[in-house]
Image (cartoon, rainbow, N blue to C red):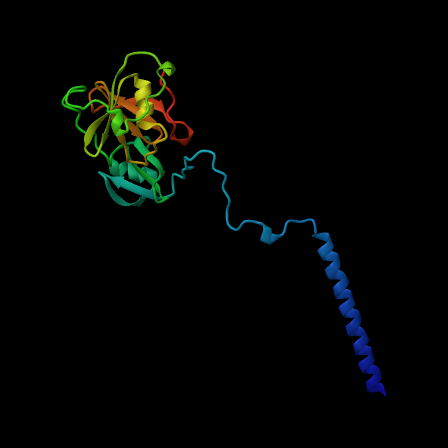
Length: 224
């Protein structure tokens, strides 16, 4: 009889414990019902990128190029020393594989030789061969000259009688290059060069100075 009463007491106690546990669980669930569920959140880190330029940690290694050759992952300062230049002389950005990279400006694509003449020896633009559309001449004013692009190891005439600004747009608008890379063109006797984030110009096909900075989406604004 005593054993029976004891088992009844145990059963009642277990039932009470279960009921209390259920009540507590319902209370906790109610208290968190308005919170965001973990499974509704994205995993990992989420970035909102307004500017494609990466933020650079001076101590973080990046892929370094010297004389066109990959020499390992180095800090920006060490990469600059390897190249014998100041850190500001390196182009830094993300390469086609998504790696943070540093290289001297246009080091992977040397300046091509100028045409025998800025005009002579280059065939005129032929609309029948899919010549590129010339920017609206009303958008710029000033001297005009022939506009050429260097591709496939040769100079190719894109258009005649365009301004410097129109030629820069025709050559480089919405075209992007990665660190160490470059794309070349000619406007009359000037060499034009696209490097990361800017278009440059040269009067001697050797020494370059800035012409215009590229804007978002690698667009080229009109040179005034």
